Image (tube, rainbow, N blue to C red; front, side, top):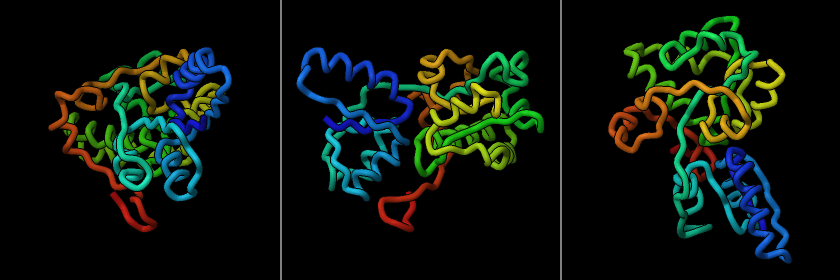
Length: 220
């Protein structure tokens, strides 16, 4: 049973696979983690065999795999964007849900994010920065956040955890579930920014991001 899944789903999918094998011991489950969009490209562009695809964003399936490679998906969980850090991160004693953007923009602070074209957490980070600019009434904020520390962009958000642990970066934009699974500290962002609340859909709709589309050279 070949399973492609988002890096953010590594811990729960490992547990699910173990539970599945107790019930079906003769089935070998092969788990392969990558950014959700990278996983989808393995199916659509590389024609890799895949039985189950666990995406961090159901719209990846809608945009890249339906109708040619699958006909449906199941929404099974919700999440929210947070800023994760450790007790050794610079600014750890002062960062909070109100001043986080000022802390991240300090020259001595380094933070990481994932690639928007490979990983939903990456484009959600961009959306978070744009919503923050609206929420705080500072229209230059999104560009300043996106332009800083571009050397720390990685294919998927879980690739950044090692950098965080060794202190090469101080903070990372990531899902709350991943921060919790790895025992990290995190900053809770306002609902206007964190993308968790269906009630805020109209506000969230003000932010857009352009990423690679279904065919080479196209965008969505």
